Picture 1 (cartoon, rainbow, N blue to C red):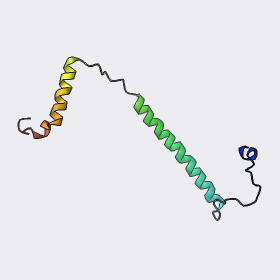
Picture 2: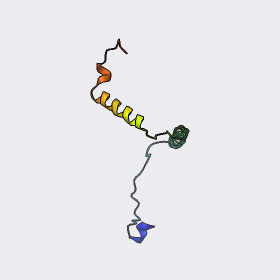
Picture 3: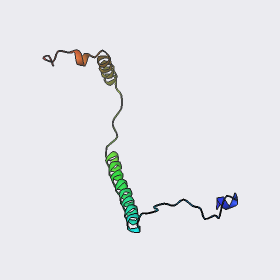
Length: 90
């Protein structure tokens, strides 16, 4: 419709051909396989969404102890204290 408004429609017979030498049965099989794959991907994605939405919101309220603990954990991580500690003391 837009092509006819903008005078782009060319009524020539030259067109791009698809599936030139492929039998009709194989074309049908191709499109059926693509449709099945789309439905399978949609179903698997719906399972993923269901998995994402089943969790509860995390309680992220911050108290003074949490801030101190997080700062200590950050410092230990930056100084690599978790890697340098003696394994026999742990």
